[in-house]
Image (cartoon, rainbow, N blue to C red):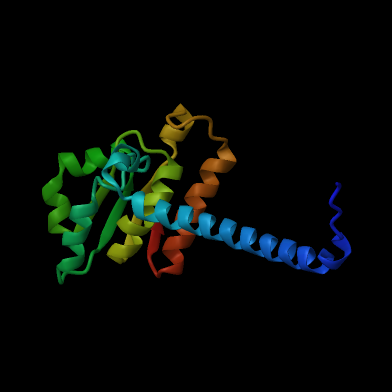
Length: 173
């Protein structure tokens, strides 16, 4: 009482079905990848990621509001002083001198050249000064953000100078 089934008649159909199944699986995988990608974009702004998103290694938030105020003024910026605690100290000790000469102080204590390079566009180029004074490298030598070779330090300073020059800003080192 054995029942035999002839597979030869169903072979093309099963191949076609297998091909369709592979296509459906590929589409399904693409859908899941797309869903993960877009949900990542949407939920990356979620409150649960606030701590991660608030990490600001170059300290871009430090002068964000002040930069917006400068951009809204009609006065041309004469010079931006970009640097570390020494530069910050110049402004802190002589704020009237900076205001009278339309100078902007953008020093941050402990900063290294890679951090300054990241800050360079919003804090120098976007303010469109005539001149930028760059004081950098001492905290790199101190190892504030890890080891930095002399080449790394000079490359970062050169990159800032090149960005300034490309935007018609004179450089003082």
